[in-house]
Image 1 (cartoon, rainbow, N blue to C red):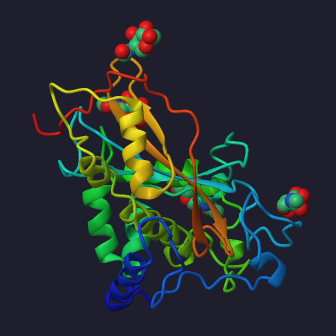
Image 2 (image 1 turned 45 degrees about the horizontal axis):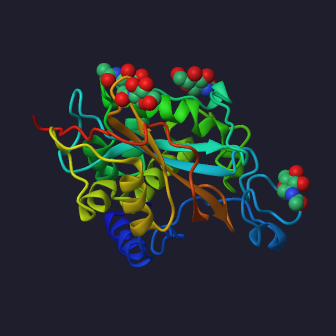
Length: 282
Ligand SMILES: *[C@@H]1O[C@H](CO)[C@@H](O)[C@H](O)[C@H]1NC(C)=O
Ligand SMILES: *[C@@H]1O[C@H](CO)[C@@H](O)[C@H](O)[C@H]1NC(C)=O
Ligand SMILES: *[C@@H]1O[C@H](CO)[C@@H](O)[C@H](O)[C@H]1NC(C)=O
Ligand SMILES: *[C@@H]1O[C@H](CO)[C@@H](O)[C@H](O)[C@H]1NC(C)=O
């Protein structure tokens, strides 16, 4: 059960692990997942040296994970001094991706809220309402979009990957959707380790109506903080900063309990100079 103390202990464990090393939690257990072979447990997604025996154990479908964030200034969403969560995406190892992989796993925003409440994630929900913001509609519409488009593509996040999975259970019942809870839990835990606002501010890159920044300044600040370079996203029309994508491979487990190893991102979609970091508070 997801008692608050266990969640707090898990957060303490994560914080101690350092800025980007997202390790399996202590005191809080996702799953329970199917038992994995020693061979699978020794592997890392996209870098496996031998065939993965069970695609529940190491992500095989989208082995490059992207923890993605928004800077929503127009209209402003979320705290003025924080980026917000976009999602957790399974890209293929080559950077291509697929979406909406399994309609039977889809959920609505209301179902997501009910599932998180059912499993006792009241703090998680409170956190999501603050940091996982839809830019136009109700937050639940972004949450369900993210789950339905991206999380349904995880090989290792399927209900069949849980050791208490029952083929005869009502797979859409709230109590059967631990997979949904684990997705939202894991995505927020990873977000907490990637404070883009603070990393940029440490390098003097702060929202401004008068200054602009170069892509190198932005990437340099994040590389210094996190050791890798994310993919930086801008509005193509205005060159305003809008997105940050942090890339990972996952070691020794599935997408919800494995260790996230940071890797450099792909080509950014911002101009090299004249990048605008629009304040949320005008
Ligand atoms: C990695 O695992 C995938 C999925 O099992 C497999 O297709 C691929 O051949 C493996 N790579 C190596 C180098 O064994
Ligand atoms: C679960 O509910 C969603 C949304 O209502 C629906 O799209 C999906 O088909 C349902 N899945 C199953 C297995 O009934
Ligand atoms: C909200 O975000 C989506 C996805 O990034 C984008 O397509 C849309 O234009 C945005 N809407 C507003 C009002 O900014
Ligand atoms: C981005 O750079 C291109 C090529 O120099 C230029 O044509 C375009 O106007 C720039 N876009 C913005 C939004 O500044």
